[in-house]
Image (tube, rainbow, N blue to C red):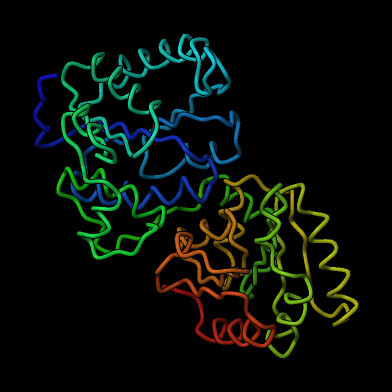
Length: 365
């Protein structure tokens, strides 16, 4: 296909992704969105996400992201057809009219496919390019020949890492910058970003106003999703690390979590009361906030302690000082920012002393 020139000042950029709809994975893309907005402040950004998990909780929060004009989550049903596993004709019959509507309504002038593998985002990008005669396409030349299917392509993840002096496997924030290399854009330390939503502000006023003027510590034990249990820190570790010697008794403890994590929180609370008594105020908000409302809870905390789960990434993006506990090394999930302290399989003393030190540093500006 004849190559279309890159727009010198793109006005409507459509970002195409799939893979995982987890809030952490989606938020990691916000660093790339921020770099695009810095380069072209007037550009309107939209996300088009091909979603195998329709109705995922992250959709509401990402649709409210301040760097995006809108987000489209299009469900794709995967199964077996013609003897192969993949997305079949029925899904494409449902998908194509939605893509045509987005093309007609938004008329993007730049299409960026951030996915280095798979056919779905490639086919969607090529279809939208045909629907939008002024749109240039960008992809990732991950495998031989793939880069030729776009107007312009960034390097493979391996080449990108080598040229940027980064270790493999790349963390998910860096992966999005392989495509942006085709635009001459680099990360340059850009952090992931998020703002407290309007719903988060309202929730904060309704539920946390009685704590006004007090320091708060948020705790997300998390990891109740099937298959994620090995990421959950032991309750005994948390009980010992949140002793009055490390966490002053006047600081309330706010527990967060999904509805299916309330039982875990209650188990922790029983152990905590048995060990340290009932002097400290502890409030369990598991299942009582949407992700949008959770922005208000996390932002109110002087320190947020979490397992490797969605709220950890939210705290990082909100700029809240936070400690993340990993049961094992997982470099692709780390954030290298001033407000983040990563602890790998810590002892209760290590974690407790870090909590005490972090609280003594006060809130971030």
